[in-house]
Amino acid sequence: MTAHASARPQLFSPDEAAADRDFGSRFGLLPQQRLKIMVSRSMILAAPEIQESQFQPASLDLRLGAKGFRIRASFLPGKDKTVQEKIDELKSHEFSLEDEGAILEKGYVYVVPLLEYLALPESIVGVANPKSSTGRLDIFTRLITDKSEVFDRVEGNYQGPLYAEISPRSFSVRVRKGSRLNQIRFRRLNSQQFHKSDFALKDKELREVHSQKALVDGELNVRGGLIVRVALNEETLGHNCVGYRAQKHTDVLDVDKVNYYNVRDFWEPLPPRTDKKLILDPGEFYILASSERIHIPPDLAAEMVAIDPSMGEFRVHYAGFFDPGFGFSATGLPGSRAVLEVRSHEVPFFLEDGQVIGRLVYEKMAEEPDVLYGQTASSNYQGQNLKLSKHFRAG
Image (tube, rainbow, N blue to C red; front, side):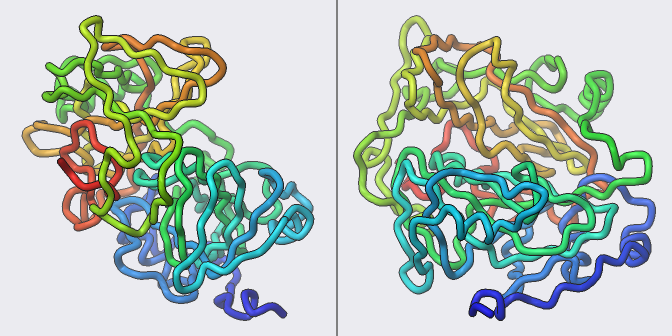
């Protein structure tokens, strides 16, 4: 048995009766107080044990383990193999993440076993995504589980380890054991929801919510979710920078250093143009902001999804989850802009101020979290305008 395997916490059989007892008739995304119950019931396990700072209002931060693997290409294990079996087939070398950690070079693909493990009942499924700071650094990160044919999803009844696929795209980064690049949220399903794939609130429901608790600071525009438009003018953003473009040749960036780096060592600020347009160059990475100020009520969570590819050949928002309370206040003001991670694909693409760039889909929480986004020290982006990741010094 390897040292890594011997360090794993003991997995227990998922207990559906315990889930019914602990969660009652609550269905939907589970808030942090219910995630803590999952930990106490050994549905979520970790070695070393989970820290209080990992709990977000509706999600749990996941931590990198003690070693990693550089692999030749991204993969999914498929229904008959474990992730470790695929790693053994595809790895080019293994490295340690202890102490000072290791440098992950941009353009390469890595897989790192995580410190957390799951033993889920049938009624609880997991959904993962990169943390906001990870997306703003253009680190492509996905969750992989054993015998799975999809990324970032954990099926009910899953028992086993978790792995992060990591591919830095703009900057080479230093990571170490305990670094947090992605997060997971859990959805409890009732018997009618087991085969349901769309949990988003319908447009009619969004209009009803907006009439009582503002979802945006201005007019509500919905079409399969709340329409989000890009801001490329200084009047909306309040300063003479409408975005940032990642530089191609920079130093290594340590993902655990906060408020440390000079912006101009990694980013090119983009001044506003008189025509309020921006040409996206193929392969370049941009940080932009929404025209709307977003409000996520305490009983909802939201996720940014890309627009229909027929509307533009670019990708937006690698890290698209918005916790309950993001930008929210009882008065509905001031709200927080959605910061957009944007990459153009094959051809240059013209963006114009106010152009539709994404949709925000809302989903019901099983219950309101005990703590909302903005009420903890880790709420780095509450009230944000155009903002880079927490690693960069303001000003």
